[in-house]
Length: 617
Ligand SMILES: [Ca+2]
Ligand SMILES: [Ca+2]
Ligand SMILES: [Ca+2]
Image (tube, protein in one colour):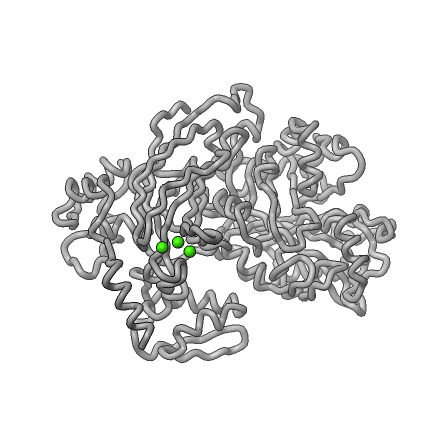
């Protein structure tokens, strides 16, 4: 009863202000619609004059937009269109995919099988599925013998993480590899096996993937890498050839080792670089069927980094460096790293002390052409947002073409010359009111949102402090209407960062959504920018939830039984569901399913306008 009184109070004092709009948007509505409704002709003019979309088929976009517009049968609600997925901020023009593999950044995960931290969390196939669904193309599996030395497990060795069977991991990789991108998946093995288990891995891999495998030439001398287009729907293995791998002495990862020993192992060694001396003995002979599977040979970095970075004209290789080794090497040998990455593959991985699955600045690797900047995808925070932002480019296919100066050297490259001024006007925010409890942000009043806008990028492109808008007091529908400008020197590597927070005077400001967008793909015009939560999960749009979305949600649940309760709890009363094996089967028994599902998957959107005030490139 009391909560109703409070709710009433909110209704009286803080009415929804949908009729209040930024001036520019009011103008557009006035110029291109009649009472907010557009016909095809209005729509065509609007796309051309406001959005700068000259070549698009206005009729087909109009038709696609209309079904969401149930209330108006004749035209298109302009405001509704502005806030729809069809008005997304990125151009969908694909990169050239026919250059050698080394000319692309590859969306790469670190210890892909871990569900949480690097020390005590469970190993599972679920994070592998999730990574593949997000378009991740580099999957890492650490191979260890089981306790009886008869089978191969995947786990983070010498920690308290649980293990999962390699067989299961390979199976889900086969099933999900191309569910969101048809470009090749690279599995990197960190191999702690003996000879007989390697033979077993070879059989398992061949048996599971069959024709999907990208196999190297028999003489092991891959001199130029094929292109991602050449390898569509292929899976490649990259690891150290057996005689360069370590032979584990104890073979079994010890789960009950003392904390001190574990800590020691983290500090002295990182996980893909097996330099732990007592573990290393020479390989006795080799397993040709295992070696034959390795598409890209990995080499171990030891000693002088200049030796590791030496380019062998007769053989392409993959080198792994920890984030610290990379930073250290780039101080003196930046140019050599760039030269190495023009024809070879460099993988960078998080330092071993990141037990909490945090990440590092991906630009340390990208600026030097490192293709595989491996991240803890189950992590969170700004660095992960940048990674996710970078791979929104190129239709999210998991490969992004590196800039020319990194691929082949470009004598005309001037890192200090401003090539473009990006002008961003941030208009308004929308969507929080329907998803959050009225007291979520502030206990006694509506939230006070502000937005932060900035650039992450090469060298000086990085904005030292983000532009912060004024905060709009007590309003679920903030209108900021503020302009900021960013000079950009290397647009190919720049990311536009947007973050929304609730301003508070007494405590830490609450997070309310974020996104990062590749500047080179930004479309001009008034655009709808979907925001993501702290883990980078996307929110979907309530008004557009259809029966298909409902099935997609069900499928997500199947892939993610961990979150089963979270998803199911709000919909339990209206659907019948059943669990058969890993599958959850739904049956709708009444009610509008979309509306019921939606509270657990909110939408936050910010409309922005941007345009290049000055384009010099
Ligand atoms: Ca607050
Ligand atoms: Ca407030
Ligand atoms: Ca507040």
